[in-house]
Length: 376
Image: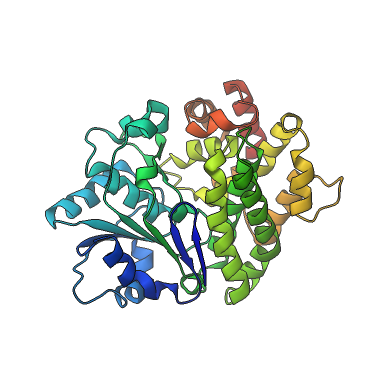
């Protein structure tokens, strides 16, 4: 079992879930609010986690996490937290459950609309202490278990990024056993989310050599093991490496992210489409890589090396072909995004926190052009 502190404690291995009781005791949690979703409850993962809780722990359960967490859902979970005198949070699921748990932790001690605490509104410096969070990922993609950020759709329909070290889970329990029965398409989409994190973080102009190196290592794992995990969900070696790659992707984006995420956040805010974040990142990544190609110096050389590609390989084209091999959509058009949506989507990108760490900050016109390319 590898034990990492970067910067929170991370336990990763098959059977790691057994340390949950110790994690709760270490962080003084006896009345946790469990934030999860109905899928986790229905497939039996919730029962597995519940089964390792100590007898003296009295949990409350919020299982209404939507696929893209909303401020409305955060407020509903917050009411449950307050009504039951909870003293900490266990987030079980994919990035949505972990982001919702962070939203609840934020709102227990920070009043007003959630947008007030977004990065774009200076929230990083304003957010104070929050209740302890234990994160238990059941997918290998977002890496939210080792990051202090979350993305929430506000009551006004904006998808905002909130980041603070005070929202970093006190402990991440990464048990690949919980991912063995993940469906093929969800395995593919979450895995490509990890790839997008590793690549975008590496390409940002922010100087952070350790984070850059971690991103390249995570990228190598995704390229090597994701297709194996999709083809055989019970390939334990592949599942372990993908869970590590997901955490590495989030460690890497200490450097920030870029236009892939700005565009994904814009589309993901549409509550009618309800599109999966990782799938959006996968589909948008080739388009943004082509846009960034002339603005990253020699960084594509190291990306090709980490991906075991030829020196003259077209990375964007390789990723498009990899998406197809994984069974993911070819473009945004297949996902229901239409040309008439583009002006609103492009405008949304300009206010997204990830926009500001892209190698070249696109104009609203350039965002519109990239959306047009990604739709067709």
